[in-house]
Length: 226
Image 1 (cartoon, helix red, strand yellow):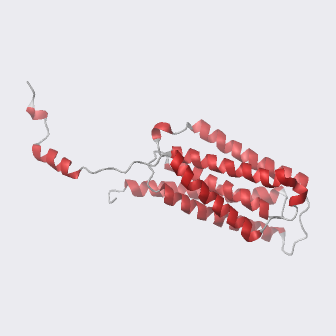
Image 2: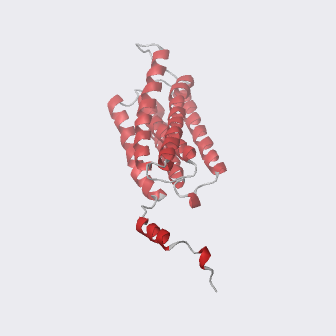
Image 3: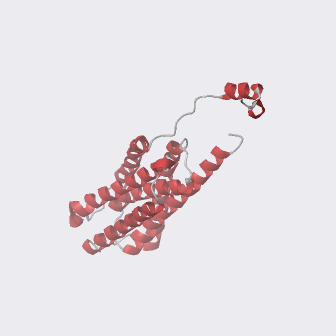
């Protein structure tokens, strides 16, 4: 015999049935990347068009000028792809893989910086001081990266993730590396302290901005009012 005492009330079952509605599935990683990669390429290209290519590009050669930036842009897309995987918890990558790729990306940026400096160490003369140049590059690249983070957040707004800070940081780091890939082609300063200080801090800033944005978006989605 079936114990009817454990069966939910008929009124409750009807109320649940009336409340049922289709749920929009979380976007899959690859479609997200297809939507975000053009955004990154467009914003990075606009920076290069507005500022222009650095004067020593002939000295650097095509491999260190364009090849290195294309490699950084590819790494940025990989970071965005990893962030998109956070929207599907069953397929998300282990933390050690995430940290390894992040560390490898940082090493690539540092290596490109040193190779650029060793190949073309001359910087100047300039009409403004190195400090002002660093502030301009730092703020400018952070602002450009922030715009890209904002665009990423707009695409990311409907994604579900159990690690919103990690997802946001990956989106932010991808945005920062994409901007750096273009900014290094325009900035005439080769010194490591400038490239790693001003440009590198901009990448870190966008990663932090992305992490904060991810936490805020997740908190709003979990809010009872929503």
